[in-house]
Image 1 (spheres, chains in turn orange, green):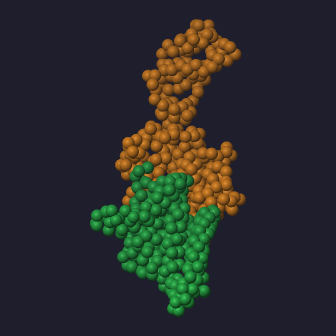
Image 2 (cartoon, each protein chain N blue to C red):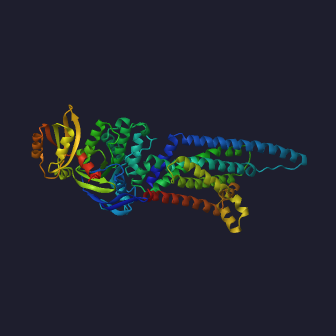
Image 3 (tube, each protein chain N blue to C red):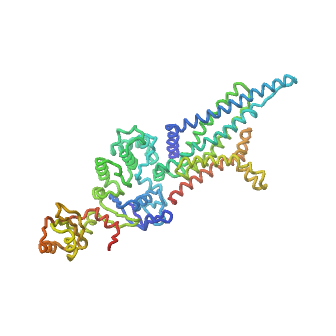
Length: 314
Length: 259
């Protein structure tokens, strides 16, 4: 549905997006993950025809965004990071305005306005001026605005930013319910959001794609190495030293001391090494006490940090 | 065409839902009324003097209302318009940039030229309303005197052209910035410069002085206020308007590249 090929975008001399390519299939929910200023919004803006690419091509449903912007814009519902509200209009008149410039009129406009107000639960504030709404409601009006012409493609730039936990869950449910009939691209830097709503993740950092895969694969890919949590009773520094020397351990991180003598460590192993046996041997031979040992699975958060932060120690 | 209308409707609506339109209309009407009153008072005094002299010499007195009152009032209205139009145009695009609604317009299936025209017409209608209301006292003159009708109409058309040209220039300036104060200040500077630019013409060579004289918007307006609709001036104003809108379009289009 959306195909991005070798997209590059410069802001002056600064490269915001560097030669990225990806595809989004029809009916898929793609999560765009990255730290701030990674190039997420820029990429979205190019897809929605707001910005022009410095080089590369973007096609939406076969239409080139540069050559057929009107066709592309008709297919896309876009919700920018800050909801684009006219603060002097009421919710209802705002939605009617957006609907009409998106090509709806007459009865269809009325029906669509009602439908999106129901979907985003803003019916009861429809006569209020958008400028006086709270952040959460503005966000919902922004979402309603993107949905009004029932677009095939939805591009949502941080749709849950500024919402309270209940609203976040509702919004995620709403996005999930839209999957299938709509192709959705969501950008966020909130990781659980991606694992909860998206089928595929694209991690983008400093304008480049750091990883692109389904969530399970991404987790698996890094699972080769694992993190083991151990609680050992004994002297902190000595334990650290000895653990580091175990064959197959790549990193030992001290976490905290519990009850004065219990030392908690995170041990990261090299791929396909089992260090547990060796670890127990050392504990026994040094006459420490082993209180706990368990595998900590790598969360999406760890994967994200691993991919987006440079390891400078190595 | 429909899209132009939707934008126009929203834009005009926002002038009137906020105090902007009311403040602009009030200020314009009070000021032009004040000028009109003073011209009228001066005119009455002058006619009384003329009547006395005419009676003394035993001749018919004749004072031209058009030349002595209406033409002056047109010039006053034009000067007030120079002050008021930046307030009409400053928000047109700068505000959209500031609040992020430009992103909505740019990603909606309408072309930039459609929404630029919609905005231009909204500003133009507000300006027309302002001018038309300020014509009420001029038409009152018809009840008490016998001014010529057509020069009044040509002056009205002239004011519309003049305002149309300033509006398109102000719209262009509003597209350069997201700060409304800057848009207003720069527009005001340019309008005033266009108004007085021919003062320098006497010290220039013939070619340059004719160029400067052509640019001076007041000389084109002068014809209309005298009752002359000169095609040269009509073409000047129309090309000024179209050029301003065209440059606005280019300026908006370049946002996609520059940002």
